[in-house]
Length: 385
Ligand code: COS
Image (cartoon, rainbow, N blue to C red; front, top):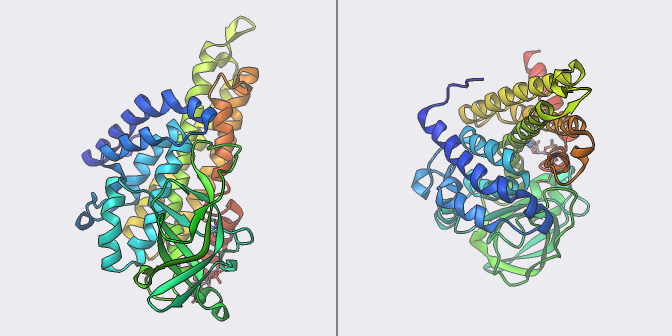
């Protein structure tokens, strides 16, 4: 469908498509096998200036919005969700600075994130705090001119590769969610180290490790925003970032549909290409319908978020649920259309099915997204009376 993109938006699509077709798709199977971080591809994305899409111009970026990064991520997601995750995680790590950071923090960190010279990462999850984001145990205590961090963050995307980490820690346990604060930690800070690389079902070439803070000392001015505002910054960060996960589902769903249709046209059974059988056509038609509905919703939600930055939650969670549930279903269907071949690593759809699963889990499970939508509906209809 024609979404009437501007010339600039079409340029973002074309550039991202070129990187996807020339670099990501040819390498994705080998990267999945070796589980090596896709440094060369991310360097090409940096050279194309795409790491700075959403960073304001005054900090060296292109000053564009959620919808624009969504366009790039759709293409990267079509190529490989693992590579796209490594790219998207840097934006996720930068958003707390962008949303709540002081001018000094923005000046120090955003320009190097915008060029891709340094990647960022976002650290919320812990062993006992995932969906229950306010249940974190990591602490930060002020000691003279330094904060001292202790605790362990778990399953952090880009860990070990990023140079800049935005980390939430408890600064006053008695205050509940109002007692958490966000900080910037640099990879070279004393007392900061990483756990081993996690072995994952999918998105294997993205880096996932623990962050370990043992009396990690950072300067006082690395506090992001005011003390006690960390939870709100985290929630706003996730609201802004979730359409990016949603669109990875759309890109991935498109890739799965492309593979399924191409195969169904070539595969001959009972003397005919299997696409001529209505049973197969109906599977493909449902895939295409759900995919296009998801794309429309993610585009609309992203535009809404750009126009109404104070009203992000419902649109963001709605599109994340819809598009990532679609991606799971559509990739399973693609494997079914390819049958035994679909189950073999020789064809790309088994990787697509493995990669799809994480989209329903990270940046807030789809059950949490439904909670958010439900709570927002409750608030809206209470206001209406
Ligand atoms: N934007 C701004 N403020 C928000 C907010 C949002 N989207 N969501 C919540 N808040 C505020 C609330 O208004 C409340 O403020 P007050 O203390 O002034 O009332 C405060 O934050 C606490 O909110 P709430 O009571 O709703 O928090 P809960 O602990 O019940 O948690 C959910 C709410 C479940 C929505 C939250 O914990 C969540 O999003 N969890 C998933 C986290 C996640 O995505 N984890 C994956 C790992 S990160 S990659």
